[in-house]
Image (tube, rainbow, N blue to C red):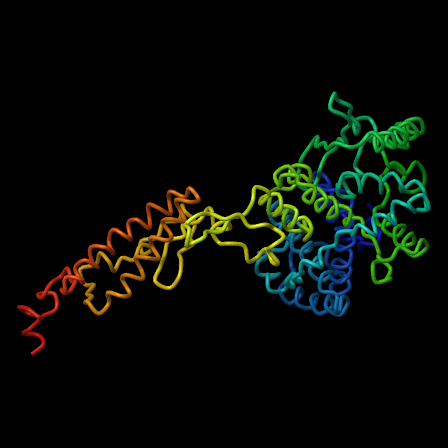
Length: 468
């Protein structure tokens, strides 16, 4: 990392902070930190040339920096957001570690969360994975990528879905492992602190790695490659350090332009390093891998991280649906009270599949105006029409047609449950039926159903006095 552009008074602070950061973060992230801190320290030094620390930093200084920051990144919301997040982490860290140079004021009184722009909401179509057509173009023309030393890196990005920082952190003495099951890529995932992580690779990819390992091992020594990096600069000012991922990104940009890598609309498709990671996540899910296995492969901290960017294609959705329905879909013939198989070819829109099949794990309890389709395990005190057992519910013979219709519908649902083997449907709707039928018998006898009786319909005692 190069600190020469950071003002001299703040250089020791920057070095001490980055020494802490580099212990658990990638070189690429720390290099970005240096660039962001340079902008902040340069502004503070120009504003207060006599300062040698940040003890006197105030909210006014931060507000002035925010004005300068907004002018510098006008219209670039993502850049503004990332720069301010890194600055906030810096101020919070030196406060927690009790650096002598830390501001006297608490960080939450200097930089507010409202100062940081909200992230741009991305639609599903904004997810930056590489379409199949682009991948084919890359594979066909990859030999023309310049310089050629970057080709193995692209091969690994494509094969593993690892972050570029983790690929560049590979060590030639322990990055390749062969077992009885096959070949594995091995390395540390810095961002989520997954050490000795490994993922399977093909024999062809392993052969590429073996060739690179052989060359770099013969050329390395304790001076030009003391940490045994696989992808390392062996000479120059950055001797002994991994390749710069910005250089790889620029190389991919030139590759796109020179080899005419275009999307379906004929526009150039500029490939970013991280896009290979998105693509691998999509590929693994679309090939049917369990999401927890994809999470482990990608070394994500949670399944939600995996779902965040892994786009499941419509073709995969339909394939999964067809697999789930390969035993057939059935509808109920009300007249014959028998299940009838429905051919998939007869369904124009899979969203209109018979509800008996789609809702196989729901209650399907008949309600007054429809069906209750809550999950079976979800309790609901009002599902089974509590009015039927309420003392205050009153009905008269004029409602006999409605009761007869309701009883017929509930019996139909019970029959559907029997046909599909859904005991839950039978039990819950039978409870409703057991309440409806006695009431109907009462009404057919020409009497009113009201559990509270006459006293419940009249004022008595103190209520009568109070009403007067």
